[in-house]
Image (cartoon, rainbow, N blue to C red; front, side, top):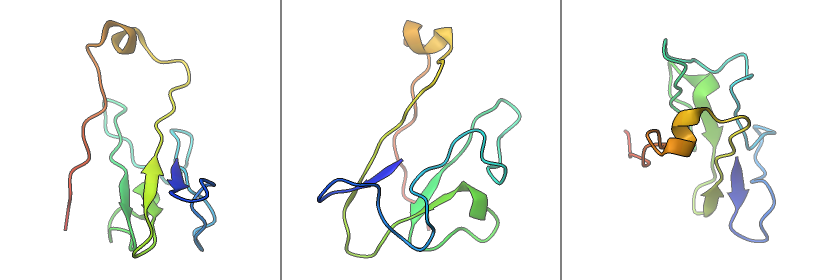
Length: 87
């Protein structure tokens, strides 16, 4: 979920959502169930369902919510990866 830096609501864009979840029909999951989520002003050409729109010059915060995490989360053998810039 993407939140506006100020005053902290979900970031408002014409995309009409600031979130993706594993139940999103357009989200492309990998065979192991993992997903790559893209943040930016334009969707990647081949992955529009894996994208959350941001606004130029507007800061935002990202929140990862886990509902029913698996044992690896509690054992700390799985962690989400850091954000990586892509072109």
